View: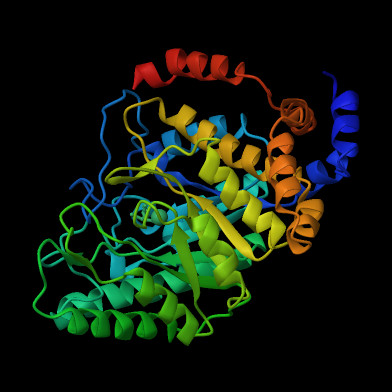
Length: 414
Ligand code: RNT
Ligand code: ZN
């Protein structure tokens, strides 16, 4: 089917495909730098710690900033849509043997990221890194009972607020700054309340660093458990939601890999949008214990996108990808994940949402079911192909030829 006949098929359902494509082009999605090197970064050689783990040893991972930038550029050239780049603090770039510990990081250590963003005319998001560092004591950072440890990490958080504001001022794009720690306990705690009270105090101290909330959006991300912290996490769902509710310079971040298996973030999105002017998402794919597989165009991914679109909240939900697979070509992982979320957004924009709402409100549940099933068979692939054509990328899997070529010419030489 051509675009024109597909467009007519959608039009029969009252759906404007041109408008959907035009809308999608305005929605920024943040691409995480950490898929490129298995979350290692440039400021440590101790490997990944903190309750998260990559598995796999696919060859050719980026070993330095130049390789990471080149790999990201290759991936971005294969994706349609508006992008931001999500940087973690452990990706500081030090020049000439200089080094600054996490509590002493400055904007200058991220100038190359700003240059990279400006080159591509995109915004930057940022994350303090509370893992992969020797100053984590008994698995704790911001909720540690050791004041030296806790203060070190508070200073890190404050430094990251300053760096986030620098990102926003340099790029002209609001910077989302996400606080996630792996703080928790392997086994039954003796004092949950103390851990959470210290965590609360630490985050509030970080938020007391002066900043412009129009430029920097601090978030707190919750988690249910991590590797080695199976019994308890300081930043639980209730904790993260409450701290965002109690502080008007902080917003909640939901990672859809961070809940009990039958809970879905698609249902949580419209709940939080009733109360928070803005929310943030980490879009990922959980499998059993792992929260970080490559995003696919699957049911729950589509459902999340639908809920954002139906709430007319594309400009109230900061969307970032978060996965890290070391067992497959990393550039392909980025590309598949980003393209999957683009598909989900486009699919959501192409639903007969107004009619579905009408049917639901009128109690016409039989027809609602029939319509929802029919909408699944509309010629989505042709609209996707047109969107990709307009964005100058392949709609089919021919983009993978580029990956194979890059692997042969660049990655295999590393
Ligand atoms: C970990 C969290 C967190 C990290 C990144 C690297 O479970 O999802 O967002 O993935 O900070
Ligand atoms: Zn996350």
